[in-house]
Length: 371
Image 1 (cartoon, rainbow, N blue to C red):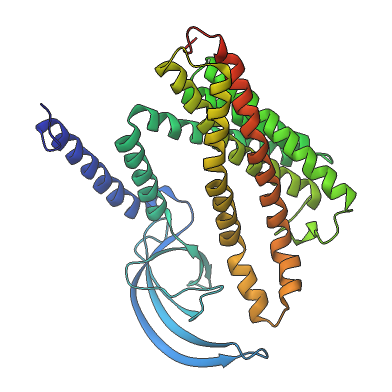
Image 2: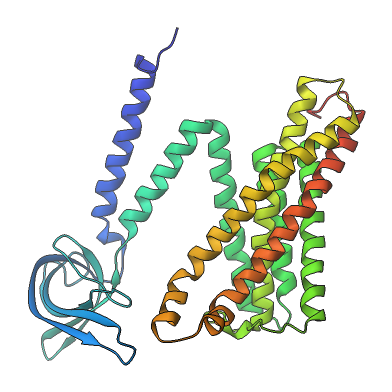
């Protein structure tokens, strides 16, 4: 009988820890992979500290530090450069540097002297280790299915980048349909990689598409009836194309993720019930699907709200700190997020009966749920 600490499990644990250690060492010393100069902080000294106050009585502390960097790559490798860094205690647009930190530098040679400035912080170590942790946790909890999930995420990420590049290359006026097509592809690929090509895949896809389309139509009708009053599409950050279409494209992708979550839970539960009890009736399956939907609907909508709060929290605090009213802050920082959350909530509500009905119909007279 195998135990948690048998030789096989201990070997796997050792390999996992060793792989993490190797990745950490590699990512910490990968400056040679970059064309832009990378500098490592060798020494830091504080030059001055001062307190500031703005017209809204917001107080902050500003520190000026002299930072010594050793260049790790490129033609200036092993050269030492010194520069001054100013950072605030609030850390809104700047940050403190400590010994051992690595940053990307902009270096120009002028009259035989190196003039340098900090471009941005080098964060690849954190990203690599977080990715490693995600892979380890998925494998530990879900084995092969966890790796399939990771593969679906990677594939969807590549597909998303392809469609973004298409949007940039084609410079379309009406580009909403481009991202709607991308969302449809996300659905097919994600579910195919995780579930496989079978009845469960078909029912889940049909439920997701129907729930997404109907919820989006309801949202569009509501916005058209109210003429979009109070919804400022121009409040989107760095909008370089039609702000309304960008908002709708983002809404479709967010809505798709929420609806897919609910549909997958319901459909997979009903298919498992059919595998367990082949005699279960179509009516019982539908009722069970509705019961599952009601149990997940509340937590899922609350998750949507938490994500929305997390996205708008920093900007809302900035608006409040600069003397804006609650109504004005809500209108310009929260209105778009609330609309997206409401549309996603409608999608969750609609996909519950859709997934329950389709699953019950397909499984009602089915003999083999794995076809």
